[in-house]
Image (tube, rainbow, N blue to C red):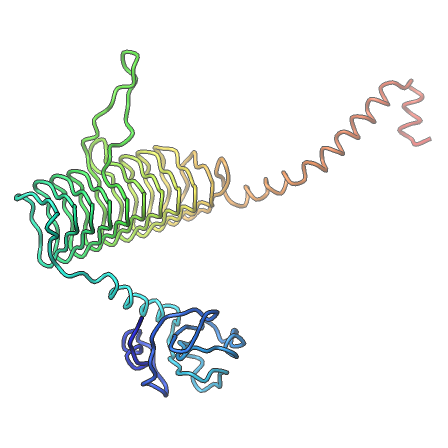
Length: 358
């Protein structure tokens, strides 16, 4: 629940409030579910028909709505980007929900050699091992494990049941959602003397500033050196990132993506759901790969790929169109086969008459 006035909403969002600045705002809501006390937003004036029966108390609209009559009786706020203004309001609400009183729960087990910055919060039954460093303002929820010599930056959020193995590094403003696993051994084995022999994984994982790894995703430690996730990259639920992978800045990996080891992924790359990447390849900056694609070779910068095996999207769509025509083409092929068989059984003059339609 909120307890704001329209004028306070304007300060938070940077929007310009018109009349009715003291109208109370108690909750955020969608246009479809708006009710009294709620605030919602409209992205385009082409959608004003949605306002006829709108029961919200306040509405954020595009700046170009100034001076125009809208079929809405509540308070109006004008923003250059109404959606972003609404997101800023959501951030305000989220900050209230996630605010934690600094302190260490009595059941937490923290090594005497670990170093915790100011205003750190550590939840129940969390373990922090020798030599770990936790930056100021970081919140560690219950039942987490922070391994030896782990470094965590400032203002990070480590949600319940996260594991961060030894030597790994998280920079500032990192978010690890519940159940994320950072720094497990990479999948490294060699076949020797008739058995799969484990290759020690003695590297680490480095997560850049403002990285988010969501629930039950795994980022494996490097065999040597570091598995690296660049600043502002976002990793969805159930993603597997193999050892020695390098990911650039502001890339996106959607749910169930699997990245095999020693793959280099550039800046601004988008991997849609269930994309699989074979190892030892390069995905160029701003490349995009469509859902359920299997990438077997490197992708140049800026290209859009799709399919299994993945190929340029235009080519993949052409192949899909051809596949849909296969039943019709098969019928034509069978008819041609039948006609050829009939011709084969005719005499020379019979074949000539057949071909001439006589």
